[in-house]
Each structure stands twice: as structure tokens, then as C-alpha cells.
Image (cartoon, rainbow over all chains, first blue to last red; front, side, top):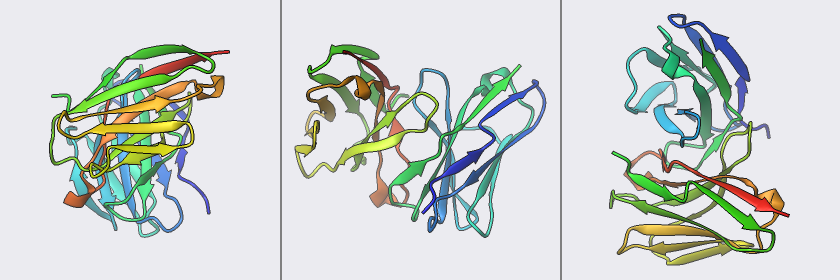
Length: 112
Length: 114
């Protein structure tokens, strides 16, 4: 059984650019959630996908968007990057929407 | 509005001592309270969790104490070890409401000196 894997591990982008982060969910899990963790803060919920449909969204602007694929892997897309988007982006997968989530190691995004 | 308040922000303990981290929540709909441990460069990992129908849960050296009337819960790490040095997050969720989406505290950086 493989855990949650994210790619890339580190990324540097310029303000105004677009970025795509990827997540492979744990085997058997059909739900993926994305979180933003700023330095020295707890993770903040961005959105959740269940069986390819968005199943909840936190207080993030529309330039944060996502996808979930038939194999339940997922992407997080951020357009028009701002300096404040610099953070650790965490993906978590769970067996279904109301069960415990398991986190990947995260993608460290730096916007310069 | 911070729905889960965590203190202290940082904690230094000697090896063998007791580490105590406190959290308070506001939303009475929360019915699941996990604690996560995060090492540098890693994602958070579930450490221990409690539901409000019990006042205490113990797993090895880790104990959660829960006070439903005060809307507070705490993590106690007994016989703290240098390997326990990490950031700890309390969280709260209401999976019974449909989705497991924990609201996290701001974290406590624990350093255990040998």
C-alpha cells in the first residue's frame, strides 16, 4: 500500500505566473483535500474532491482551482501567483469524505 | 475568526519531563478532535484523536484530556524524548456533518532537550 505522494517537492515561481501541483492519493482512497500551510501556521483548507467532484471549499479566491481524475489523483492549480501564495501545499487523501485523512509530504512553493 | 486556539506557541522541555499543549474551540458542532505531529519537511501525521463522549484517551505516552463544558482539550506527552521534538497541531472537525475537514490550530513547536 503506497501513501500519499506529491510532486514536485519544491518549486520557485515568479509573481503573476501559474502553477500546477500534483497529488497521488493513497490506494483505495476516493477523496482528496488540499491545504495551504503558511510558515508558522496551521494548515488552511482550500478544497476537497470526492469522486471527481468538488465537495467543499475554504475561503480561497477562484484563482485556486482543482481537478480530480478517475484514478483519484488530483491537481491544484493557482493562477496569477502572488507573493503571499508562498507556502507549503499539502494534499491529504481519505477512504471517503467523512473518514480520517492522511497527508503527503507537501510541495514547498516560493513566489518571488 | 480563529475557531481553534492553541497554546503555547513554543515549548521547551527536558528529557523525561511532561509536555502539555492546550487547545480551545468555539464551534459546538465539532465532534472529533485529532492531534497531529509534524516534523520538518513532512506533512502532518495523526497522533491521537478523541470524541467528546469520553474525557480522556491514552495511547502509550500520549494522552488527550477533553473538557466538553469548557470547550477545551489538551495533549500530554509523558516522559518526553528528544525524538518527540516536532510541531504539534490540535484540530477539530465534524465528520458527522458530512465531510472530514479539520480546522487546525496554529501549532506548538516542541523542543525536548536531552
